[in-house]
Image 1 (cartoon, rainbow, N blue to C red):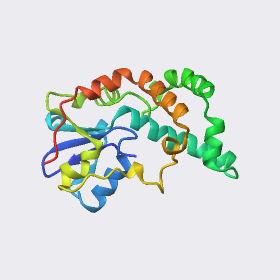
Image 2: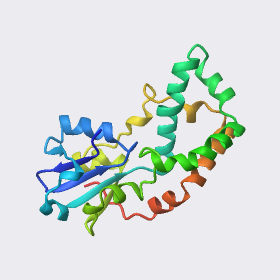
Image 3: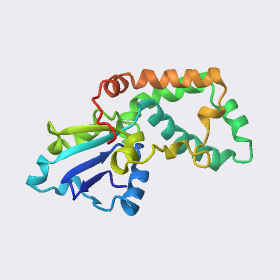
Length: 201
């Protein structure tokens, strides 16, 4: 899926993090933001390397939890355990011991998947030619307000789409899971919390 778009009208790029609104933004470019076209970061012209870049970023904890929930836990449940009630299954399957074992590997593997890699590092490494002083940051939840002047909407909290680990896991285990994610993403969280975000118009 494309994560770099050229805003032809304003000669700037919009870059989306993995698990940071890519499907949602693509839909907007097909319906409302038709001046935005997907581009290949490896085939940019020299003049384009001076364009402003808006990197759309997402809170690191909700970003990871969205990936973990929708692309890891939910497929596992649907493939192997869908005859069991989901809430009952996750509360039996996801224990503190399971979390410890899972994250012992996840802390290593997160660097090899864009969906779990740190937002502070991924685009600057892969699109280093574009990185310049005109690099700006926009929160994912501000996509609609900034580009369209409309109300904020987070499609990842749609109950029809969301697996519901946050909502259904018992609070003690859920708190432990979130604390473990915060520990793994401490650097990315600090980076995110210190960004000077551009605001909706």
